[in-house]
Length: 301
Image (cartoon, rainbow, N blue to C red; front, top):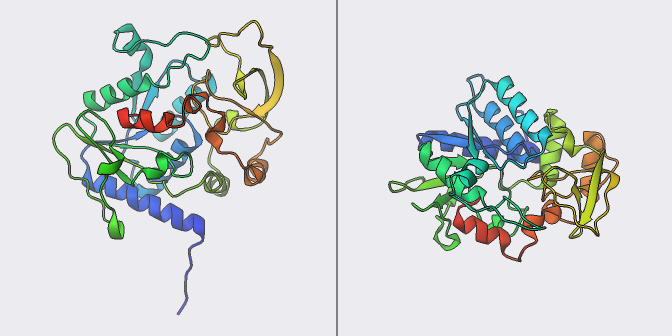
């Protein structure tokens, strides 16, 4: 009798596919939260494989802050066209114009936290009962507390102590009117796993992940890209650096790392030697020790 063994990437893929199929089975109107970053791209790829040869059954939802990298928006639009998928967009700028939220001012202003209101509005307006995200437990200690199926109350809030057990891979998606779930199929993946999977599957990713020359300033320990949204201080100097981005957020808060890795193979080699979390260059996570958890409790991704 021939024995068949899955390698670790196959096991992670199988687990993620199982979770995605459970979401499809238990919920009426799920969406994939798509940011244009590597995790949401891998998640979308997994959703395609989970239901192949049928069309991927989930629309993509993007919460647009208006401060995105142009490369990210172009990649998003190209991928949606390629997949023939439905794209739902929630606009932070519209929320600001409608006075639903107040934009921060000053040197370290960010629209990151403003996404919470826009996301919850988009979930309510589109009657979403499950939002599928690409969060991973190795990213940040608050995300390490997440279950595969993460319950949100009728205010969209997350209570870490009130999450449901997931014994024997049994997921309980029951909820009251107005509540919803977040699902995280790649919770058990690491950054290294994601890159090895991208390499193995030859998945297209934005050019921002590869080393390139870019004008930047050094702020709060990170190389922040120069853009029309960045308020440059008198003591800050514009420099041109060869760098790439390990994680993609708003252009105003996402720091690059100096790098010469211009191929997937070189990125995998570089990541294997790194000892700092990929979110170490995100200014929004440096505001406090509990910055991510505080936002997640309010309804963040």
